[in-house]
Image 1 (cartoon, rainbow, N blue to C red):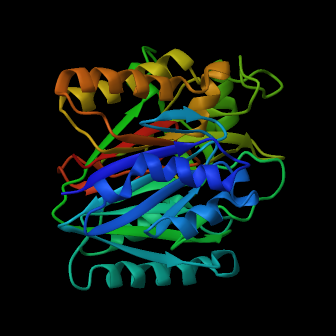
Image 2 (cartoon, rainbow, N blue to C red):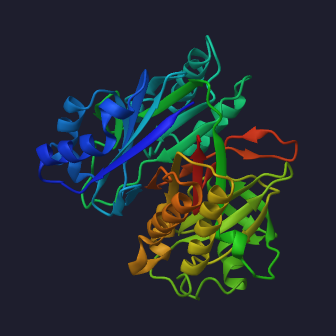
Length: 398
């Protein structure tokens, strides 16, 4: 059994005070059990001001995690904050595995090293879940990661995020592994023993009332969508009244269009289509796709985004699922405009309802993501590791 405790600080310029706040909220003396690990999510300035370094020296456990833009925890939320989630247990074990300097390695080498890492991870026992933190890389994608994970004979459920950074300049300290910072790493926190993680996925498409049944991908190359129903991707979106004559997205200040892909296996995944490739009628997505998949496009919608968040959180409450780690796509925050903390507020409000109903607090942390990794069930009832976009995912331990 795992217990989860969270802490949050907004003391970006005062390392000493940040350490005091985090230590007080986590209350190590009372709450730490035999085995403990920390998951940190942070606004990038917490590295530059020395706050993370001070926390790494002061806290009595190792940490993994990544940079993000917005965070929430049981104690509050903010867009320039840092959270630490303490996982602790007497009968579950935690091991940290990582691949580093990935920007200097080929796609083939990374895949081979990752396969070896998964085999090493399962030498004595197969983990119940591996929490995943990955740098956005030009030479290796989240789809590549899940493809390797799904190819292993004893598939390990992986749950986690691609780092999400909104700073003005290039930022190198994106990933934390064993308290060390890195620009181009993939970290896996393997969890073994008496633990039963449950996975939850929600998307605004659950509330899409459009009568459009979508089309079929007739040509694609990895993350490049070339044709739908035999016509170019750009022309298809124009026919759906989603693009203007000058290729802008109707009603949006940013070029981003979500779509849901449906595969013959029964799995569904949401993809973000983010730009038209110069000189072509092709559209680039944030993840790969296969020819023959059904595809249905939609618009970013704040109301549907909040409705999907309420659905997931209400389901957690109804089932008394506690000790929750959640990731929400950064584009979901953009869809909310000035109310970019809307999902965090829903978690906070539902936390109060949870405590009233069960007389215990809802323990949770939420961070925004550049790609959400969470297993989903196929038609055979088998968990399949999947990269999502525009999605709110959660893993509950209690």
